[in-house]
Amino acid sequence: MAPHRRRVQLSGVNGRRGYTIIELMLVVALIAIMASLALPKVSFLRYRQDANGRLVQRTLILAQQRSLQKTTNVLFVMDYAASRMRVVEDTNSNGAADGSERWESWRLGEGARFAIPTTTVDGATSFYATGPGITTTANGPTITFYPNGSASGDAFLYVGVSTGRSDALRAIEFTGATGRTRLWRYLGGAWRRDST
Image (cartoon, rainbow, N blue to C red; front, side, top):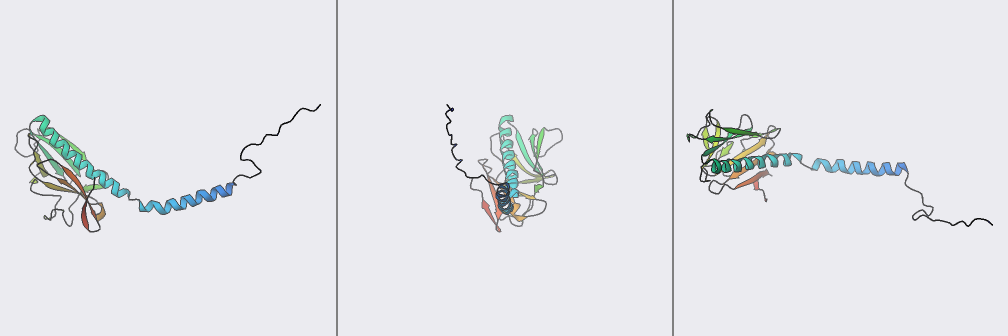
């Protein structure tokens, strides 16, 4: 007697053949072409400049917090020549960053720098920083934070790139009474406030 043989049918294998290597290569090639067409539309510069604007915002907030913690005046100084910001504990309250005073610095991201825009958000004469809260010192434009949490006044600080692209301009709005900061972008020939 012959052994009983059972026929097993695997699901999905009804005599259909699989994909050939050529068909798979064509699909991969089409995906690569579509991705290469879409990639130039993504602006990595926008994200980098937004990150630089957020760095300035965080540094302003840190300077305000430091003045409250240390119960002394704290200076936020823009060193536009070196593309960095300094937070200085102004222990002698003379409004200047002296060599003996404690300070920390943060540099803007690669390719970014403080910039002079063609037009400012507040309509003031173009400079790296504008507004009544700015004091121009030998160290650079300065905002003073007081131990009660207030600041020397309102200000706008401007960040751009070394190539001078206008769509890379960012303005950081600072409100001296509340310490609130907002980011602005220069798009299509006009300043537009960030919605976040």
